[in-house]
Length: 294
Length: 298
Image (tube, rainbow over all chains, first blue to last red):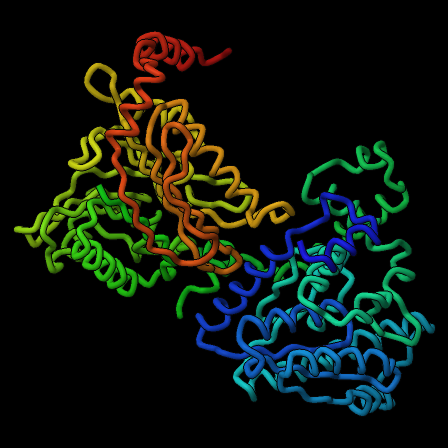
């Protein structure tokens, strides 16, 4: 294995069951992106680059799959976004030599909240959450605008941990045409990032949704990703009951929190449910693959 | 004899394109003097067809018609491929056919057809929803391999199918060569020792197990390519009864690989060193299976 990946395993005590063969994963995901983009008549990808590790990994994979010239990065800071995030995103662009554009979203977000008819947040937390979600959805509309303009598909950046916990904005950062990262836990994304040569500062800094100043995912979730992922892989992939996890030494409060979140956020992982009226209803008895019809 | 494995990436539902690719590869193999050319499961149609299954289904006769008129080589060529078969009763099957091309005849002859018996309908798979299970398990006489068996993917996860073919022949001397064609989506990426996936390692174990315990030469062909979220593994191979790997295709990439094999040599050597007659217990096994099958409330 790659030295950087092995160093990460040692430094972060990544459990064997969460370790991945990054060379195999790279090969599979590069094939996935190349095939699923070109097969449906496209040749380009547009991806929002936040300076965080997930979007960096998606971006590096796209550049390998379709070539740098066909991978368009869009950097979309808000006025409170950290300069370090923008610098880290630019380091990726400088490394991969792809086209990029910086679109500041401050004005369009602020203009919305400046309207008298838009209610203020119930409290600070509510206000921060609404604004954070609004920013994520503004970014989505920009990506889809570039998607139309460039004739490029929007590449997803949501990992398995956040999809399972519902830790993402529906129709915001969760929106994409295809997502190479959705079956990799955060801990595994980090290994892939090391393998792909993502700049070290991106691996070193604490993960953050950057919804407000000083936010980090792990302080918000209350546990480190290594602990969360260790629980998720047992619950989801190994189908172990929650009681078993507690019995073998996982933190009981963590196991309960994770179990509850996975259940309560199931709606976020589904298309809107369609009430069945006819004999043939979309996604129930009208079943085709995405690749059908091209 | 010369065997060629066509580890290709069929297009989903793109039957015309896939048939053109088959014709091209058949023509090339025939020109090169190949004896047996093996394509993967559903090589004519692609795998994740779902509601598109009925549209791409065709009768065996239609398929043979679509594969006729290929510029002949100097000697016969045998071809194995997979498709969605439309039966006389208008039912769909996941089928594999063994065809024989003769230099003097434009139309290939059907030597054997196998309809997939075991349709995976669990976890990521949903085959039974769209196709019917085959009802026959039979070995057949291949002009180049001798007594042979042809199974499709999940059939190989049921040892009873392999056992049945291994005793299906005069004097219970069944197949000497097991042709297995499959579509296996890659999964299980936690092997950090080698460039492989969990599903492929299972296939490798199965192929070696069958080769050894049934004393057969295993010819195993997988597909590659991507359909929706499935990334097919590849890793086609030929394994001798003593567990030697005569051919190993790469993972994930298309590969058309050929090897010269003296099947007689391998089978004789194995029979000489391990002359187990699996057929000796056929009557006991049959009697016990009938007893088990008749005991409804155990």
